[in-house]
Length: 198
Image (cartoon, rainbow, N blue to C red):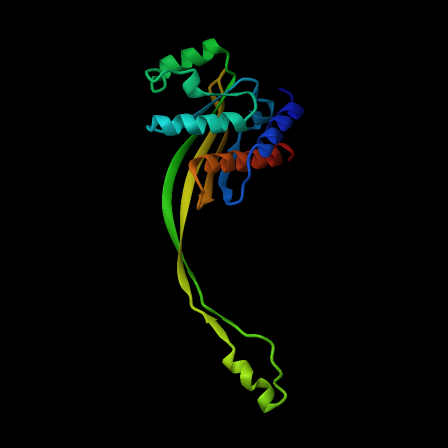
């Protein structure tokens, strides 16, 4: 895959998902990333929950061009066996893999201070500003709790088993796991495009 095809590959990932509350906190790419082939990509979401794994891998496969969910290639007995998985992927002709996993789910609390809302009032005369003071509205402060989900994303070339991309993302208050993964794919695609254009 040429550099222009790789950029097109990444741009397609951007179209597939919306990203309102996800950002990459760390990212790294190997200089070989720009030359890496992504013609036949295996996508895997590492979790013990098989139903969740299938749902999220399908989401990844829809968002990443030329991608196939790992559960469609690797049986339950093969997915955790390194030798069997490597042999199966090689035999199937995969050239790359994108792997995601949940790193943490935390709650973050933020104090939002109270505010006073005051409308305009004429202060030039006593009676002009008199009613103004009675019309103030006070919004008390409150404690806001956000759910912060951290996801790790790695991309490998399978011929040499080399790591070519790694990132750690944070998503605030994801609506559901599918939207979360769509947002993570988009955030990684945006970062990779910027990285390739340097």
